[in-house]
Length: 390
Image 1: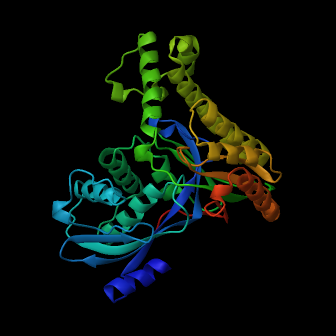
Image 2: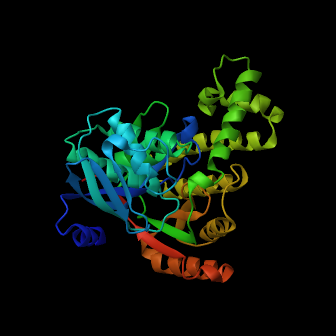
Image 3: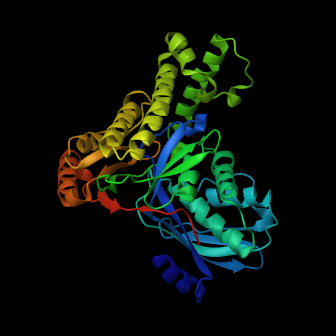
């Protein structure tokens, strides 16, 4: 790995270890976890590596092969306010961990991501890979749920993105060859194996050539619009409710939405429509996976992508075109935007025996429409994988 080579170049010794966090994909269940929806997901065998060693003086010193700026701070003087760079996720993780455990040792290291940034939850992956290393050098053992909570707090409360726990959960709970089916309200989850006789599949990643950043996107606005719709519905139904920040679509029955949806402003109504439909799609998708119906699961994933465009109203023109091309390509069972849908990539479940034909057709159609991105667009065929590890 290049991160190990760079570590030896910088520090003149071998690293103590290398942590790894896979990227994740969510075939069905997008834009719902922040309002306690249900999700499906896989970890993939591409991700983020962190070659690290302990620093007994308490200094945290990190660099990335993807970004030029090196980050440095002391464990006891971690900035309370974000700096606006890639290392904010690590600073947030440091503070969140210190609230729960005794952190005395720092860490130095080099981070390396295997795929282009955008849509595969690289932010959660960098947070978790760093967190695993920081725990290791401090002799701290966190449960899977504690790892998720610390990483979630770092991104939501420190960086300021209104996320739910989809990303961190997929990157921790996932297991190779199994579909993660998670209720983000109760934290109950199931790892559903591929049914006997299910058609073979792999995970395809089609990177649009456009990187994204949730902090500067319309992501938080979309979440607020959904929450506003839920808050209004609580008022229309004369239900008891607290502050705006405590409102969530999960607390409002679908029957109430159907009865009062015409009173909602169109943006709020569309966000709610997506959330309730997506909740239903996830449940139907989990059942389809149990019985080995990959065609139905894929159809639901395509339907989820359509709703992201028309009801959640996300997606750059390049992503929307990629999605349309995927729908027109034989051998692709289903797919959608990856992540929030503001630039980044699309993901798909594909027939591995037809991958060469699929890659050729998608690439040709996409580059024809966006020739200026021919050097930045890329495609990858991936396997499902286990969650984060040292």
